Length: 443
Image 1 (cartoon, rainbow, N blue to C red):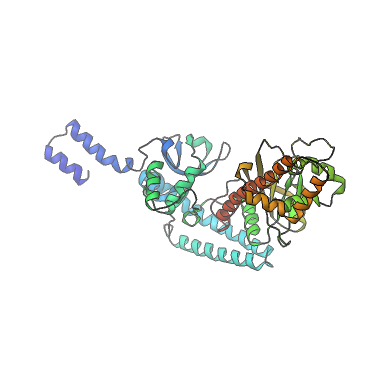
Image 2: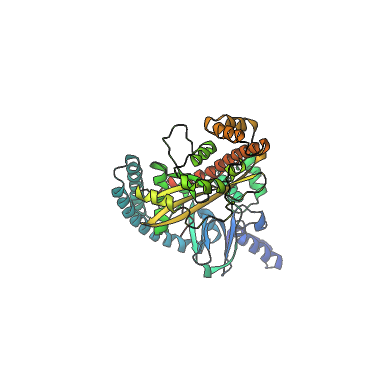
């Protein structure tokens, strides 16, 4: 019995129900302090309940009925809330971490040999090998050396009773709060956390966060995760390969072409018009909503069918021919409604020769109302687009209102494309700083 509870019992010289209650409350209060006092719906973090009744709070990084669940939790919280569980986890984590680092070094060495002609990539891999080797040596000397603030828990689907996952916005709040050392992010409500962030003048909705250097990685990446990581890092450090277009029609974006910026709708439209595919020009025009609204879609029937599942394979063949492991595609979605434009950006990684995986997809919308007059003037005055519009007006194809609407739709498409690219670059930045964390949400 601790000294506080002993003094109470001694002072009263008897064990009344009130005394027992006081002692029990005092003895379990440290544990209760680590569990949320409010509903899970008011938290910024996810809740996982295992079949034995334990509750875990953090951010779920992967969840599937087949493979189970991976959740990132704060180490100090886990130690105080589930001490016995944590001690078992700590031992297993240390053993798995050392093994994962050894296997990762072999992968890095093979990667270095395959890309040794690329100086920037070699520098990155050399730095990663040195970092991981140092961490492995420290861990071998002392399993509790340099414990990171966050750790990963893996639960098979058979061990889960209930899972409650928050929205991306709430994960964003939690991550930024952890970054700024806000107190008790795991257990307090979003209102309380938001008040603390506001008191520090932190705009959590706009600020980015990266906890990869604060996370212990004890789970080895699968081959798919590793090949995806390689593709993302090479995309960042080597010359990126990008395509954009509509439907199954993709045009390569050449980074060293004058006046060309990825996502420039003027360039997209002019590239499509000047594509070296005269036999397919009629189909191209009928399938492109931007050009269709200009009134120059020809006499062919509107192409309303969905793109085939292999729409990306022409881009993959180019990547394979140039020994590139990853590429992005940005497509204008053909089906549009009213004044809305929709753009889908995807990233593909080569898992093994001839096998590609669509890793992530980011879709964004924009309305004609989002377009300002200056952007409309810029498109109208662009030499390439101006020539196209002059021809259209000269032929009397399409009314002035229709043409103006098409220009606004082009500008809205540019806005949606920029939004998708911003999402992709945030994802990219998160996963290319290190070769082993944070875990990629794919299998």
